Amino acid sequence: MALSDDDVLRVLAIVMAETLEAGSAVIEALGNHLNVDMSACWQADDAFFELLRDREIANLMLADIGGKPVADGNVSEKVKTQKKIIRDFLAGENGREKVDAWLPRWMKFPAQSYTNRGGFRTADQWAKVRHLFVSE
Image: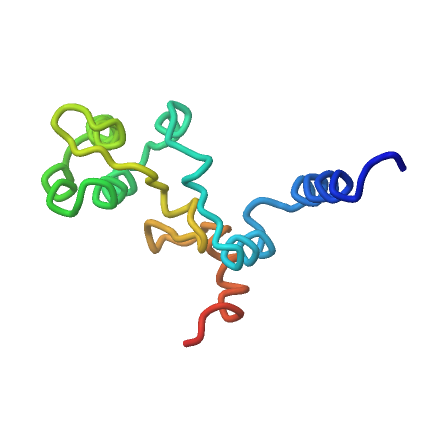
């Protein structure tokens, strides 16, 4: 009862945010509607690179960051090598032009997949609400 209306609204916003399920259709709709830019609060770290093990996806990420010619020139390289090149672009090291505010397609609103393999739940959730935002 002693809290101001502004304080109550701040607490309410936090409680509401904590109860929303990441990767749900509601989150995809909200993120798209609010034009959320995850690059303001996320950057690739060691944990991200540890979990990146798929050569095809690493190469597609490399194309996003360094361009298609760089990705094509390294398509047969090991994932470890491609991840190193991605890190170089993100840090602006080893002669690579620094790329700021890069996000994997998975973390954008709307979420996108790198492949057509299917099974990417977040993109599937976006498909459920896409018609509310995109006229075809």
